[in-house]
Image (tube, rainbow, N blue to C red):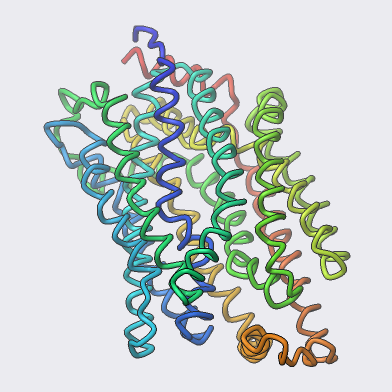
Length: 473
């Protein structure tokens, strides 16, 4: 039987803080990438959507093969860390390229730079996130409580860091832009300054857990064939169910992901408040991360999903009915939705770990790493499809026209002409915007819940039993 492994405080700290450092490295492109592309690089929204769709499809290709490549690589100095050490440089370079000041280039060249930067960031992340998750059972063994404890700490660290970042990122970008004499350069410079944090994060992770990342021995050294892996996945019915549920849920979020900044800048014209409201939201998120996980643990993995959906539904109804009247109502709705998300966020990749343990128990084939890599697939598909839906929806409702008017007025200062905001056409644009923004996630999440409730059968007790039995093999 596997000897019980105790995770040290240093290991918990480094593992939890790594997620913060990785996310920090591409924070600016992640939040402001699409806005920078359209407003500062001058790429039309339809072109931007098309280019990013192609980039997301390429990213999806990397997501499909990442688990197989990690499982079959057979490095002599580790299973996961060698991938992370190599790709951290690619991720950092991609973050810099995506926000590069390439305004003088032709539109096609600008779009190509953005698309390549996107693929470098997210293509690398397919491998790095899978590797980070693969280190979780190496740290905790078969102990489910320690696994949940570690993912809970990771959420709490991320929430704490977000408090500082939400208050500080946009003001820092604005300050640097003023010093550089160009608002767009603020985004480029800050992105370049933050990009190397992932390099530091991997170095710390290697120091903390490198001794546990030894290559597997025996039959595991033999490189599995792709068809054997695909067969193992197809035999794992719970993987298909949970991935389908996650895909539908992620589609709702991805469809509106690029629209959030436009709510603040164009629809409400309150961009100056975004940093403050974002900071308040992340402060509340830290409070939620400290309090709500205990309720998520009491509910268990299954009930937590249902309660989260009920909270999300109420928050989205609040957005649809009152979101155009006040940004503070929108902020409140976002807080409610975030509170519900912490019920399930504490489990993180543990859902996929449970499915991997179930598959190993059922088939006798250990493809748990591949199962963890599958956790990237739903979000990749959703990002490609959902981002296109949102982008083309904006294009069809005269978004480019109102963005052009808004940008011209913002540059004009005291001589600005804001008369377009009082027209019936603009009011209709805002109404269509907020209805789509509020209800698209609800529709997809409702379908997701149906798939989960009627298809997912792994109880928390079963997952613990599978992990114990697999550890004894």
